[in-house]
Image 1 (tube, rainbow, N blue to C red):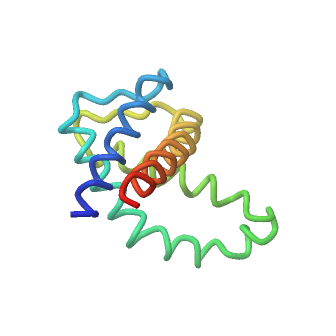
Image 2: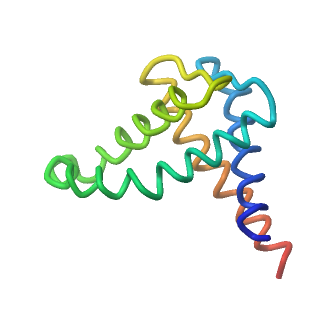
Length: 115
């Protein structure tokens, strides 16, 4: 049950980010759910490999390169999911940051309501 709620909260975060950032377009809530699912899978399976492979450059940039990786993975999700458009690198960068913040806030609120 918790995974489904987190999926819905992440989809809501994607929808909010699409309303705030003009370079991001989402067709509807169903597309946002698909984006949340694919983004979760990408972050679970692809991101750890990329973080490991780019460890030297992350070390040199004091971890700031992780933002670049997040943006690229967000952009990749835009390429994989029909009805979800991410235009440009900076749209992906700001989108990935905003989705992370909103998702964190919504999940924190949800955990607070459950306790």
